[in-house]
Image (cartoon, rainbow over the protein chains, first blue to last red):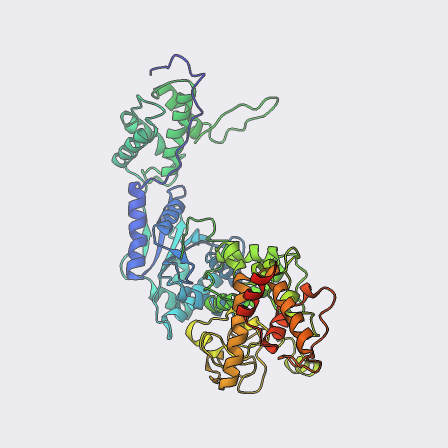
Length: 309
Length: 297
């Protein structure tokens, strides 16, 4: 690792927070796009830290939504996060309403009718709900009611639905709920897509990690001119599929773990005045993530500066 | 025309559907249009504005001619338009020019307020549904039919016909109920009693005398609102004084039915409505006023 003569004049390390279209995001957004284009219903699951929320945000921003001062608003993709710790249908109604902007208060009976009007007038074509594992049965029933009303005259608009969930183990979230014998769930199940109704989107393979590291190299080359991240692909991959970071044994790497490891290592190397990373720095950060992950630090006196990711 | 994307910070702080005012649109009409586009009951935007600012509110007879700054700022954010754009939906700038240095207020256009507008009987019969109404609030059915437009001209006193379409302003529905600007539990631009769309109200043409009178009124309004100043208003009033001195029309009744009173004291503070009433009744035209201005030292 080359050390610069003096780092006294070096500006602070700049972390790039831009969205990266990783192989996971291409797979994930591909499913979202399919639901949008075919107006189909899916449950899409991935392990926590995969980049689902970032992918939804990027997909939403690319969807061509706009508000025009002529009174025309287009919101082809309505992306929301499931309400937390709120079991009543009103909670989901409020979250759905808020996605359109400022809504003067109105009684719930009026709001559920208003929601159908606004979904139609803004041209909503697909509803994406992040953290859908937090949805309550009453929320799902409301979703069915709203989409049924949209599909009926006078609107006659079919809407796609993506329930994006975090999962772990071999349990597919919501599948059990839709398998219930009640008529409501039978109808819900009937609306699910024929192809890929329940999907699990995998994390990154070793080859995919290599390609992402190449992107990181380009992103940070201005700050670390001799950066050669690709050569650490195998090492990084094997660390990140350690059972502590990959408890389900998927042998895939999540973007959250990968970016934390890389950016923390780059920051440390940069702050030492280096122009590339070395094995010692990389290993120290990996140990922090894997071995000393749950370590309790007692703070007394001045605060030790330690940052991962 | 401006477009706002989802990444804009204004996305979540604006109404779902945003509108900018049409040329010459009245502030209250813009709110009704916003209510209609956003699938809300009549007056929702207005009530939201009243609640979202610390303004104590307006009385039931408010004419919504000059709007408080806080309300303009709040609505500008919700509609994602400039404050100046909203200011043009009122007569604040025109009245400020005519009555400088006084702060503009509705009295500058209408004169002193004359009681509430909802009679006790009507108030009882409709409960709290009539939440805001104006003295003789009226609409042009063609403006409504063409663009859901309430022009600022609907608040000018004495005009009985739309200066654009030359049909009578309608104050009542065909069912007999008065038109109410903002009504709870009813859609915008419809009768609060029978639900008839204001666009379907009758189109009544003026007779030649009425047409001439309306033309004279509108010419004077245009003259004062477009290029009027305090000086021009004073010149007009000095012409009125001269006329009264020469002709001494002691029993003259004005267009509005009010008797001619002596123009003593602070005549500069007479409302524009009254000034125009005087000028039309005495047959004084913008041409006469301009000539008088040129002759004055």
